[in-house]
Amino acid sequence: MNEIIIDKNKNEEEKENMNILQNVFINSFIIESSSEDTPEKINFKIENDNINEKLKFNENIQKTNTNKLKNKFAQILKYKKGLNLSKKVKKFHLFNYECKNPNDDKIIYKLGKVLLFTYRKNFPKITNYKTKKTYTTDAWWGCMIRCGQMILSRGIYLILKSRGMSTKDALLYTVPLFNEYPITKDKLHPFFHGMLDTYKKIKNDNDIHIKEFFPPFCIKTLCDIGEIYERTAGEWFSDVIITQIFKKITEHFNLFSNPQLNMKIMIFQSYIDMPQLLNECFIEKKYDENNDQYMRLHGKYYYFNKMGIVFVNVRIGLDKIPPEYYKGIKNLFQLKSCIGIIGGKTRLAYYFIGYNDEENSLLYLDPHITKESDKEVTIENILGKHNNKEIHLLKMSKMSTAFTIGFCFTKYKEFLELYDFWQKVKLEEKGLKILGLTKENMNYDPNKDNDEDFSPTYEDKDEDDF
Image (cartoon, rainbow, N blue to C red; front, side, top):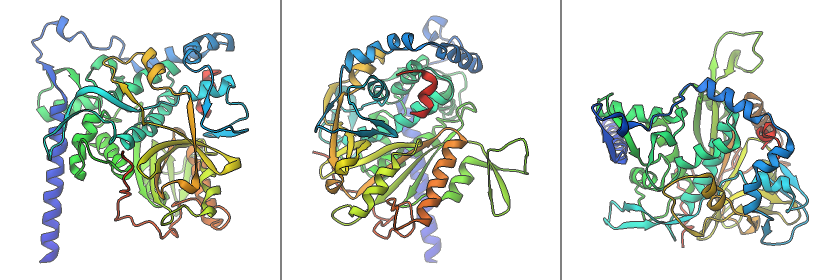
């Protein structure tokens, strides 16, 4: 009898969550028009929806020489004439790239493509569903949300690049997914049009023309869906909750449903469940001697089928991260698939993007700067507001013990690197402790939220390597 009651309560909770998701989705589309509207009113349709032609066009753009590329990135140099480190260092790693000179052009180009999200002000009102209080800024409470946007945008940018987009297009199609103001369909790449089709299905009207809608990862949408996790505007969102919301959005709104995009967001607690990851991103079929992108597991063959963004929520130690984990943390950034770590220290959330080997410190971007919200996303405001030439350092001994690691693999080779790394961790537990990527880490309780309050280039063809 108790089991029946539990199942009933669970079903009611799932039904309630589904209602929240659908209400959020419907309320996010603020302007729509029927099929009877004149062409002038619905002229936002992208002229070229032929994705193959677009990809071919982008591939041709990428064929250029170094001199032209330096001119192409002149805007980045305009905003980033040099990097300011919070402390002088001789050598550091930005993701898997080693830099001996922080003013080196290549490191400036590379950092110019790592998007910065900070506090914003004067954006459309969002409402706390508990108190009914409205907010037009996320200052003092939205820092982990901004860190979550940074790590997810990094993964989406790399995936769009892997689909053949130029650097400029990848930035212009990534940032609108996170912007605070409503956008129109022409700002959304056809890869993401599945979410608009979902809206039409909910409304049961395929003739509806959607004019403006709030982006899927804007702060309003994130706060609205936060209701499922009892979080809302003006409150602290943990790294665990923000990654769960990302997953909910992509699945319920079919954001990555386009065959050309073909990707999946996965979340693991404490360690990577590799068999589960294989089931999500590989397809089981008979052995094919012409396809070498497969994994053999328990006598079955699994062929690479989907790209993936993976988040691993971990908790290491009680008050401080034990020193024996420092090497493992730094080794994470050696992986090409690593897209960073979101965490921080007490009352401050940061996005970690590399490390300084000499002092066991991590490099991070700081979201605790309040900037004006942009109604329009242009390359100028992307380079002006989403790029930061200030890189800070935080000693790992001062880090919070709860944080989330991000990975993104866009091809089989990158997945294989992560898989080999995972196997090595299991075999060399003492010499290469990697956070929660082993089941033996008993400090993390998957039923307990990471709920510490942090609030208060060169050639485009080389971009796959960064």
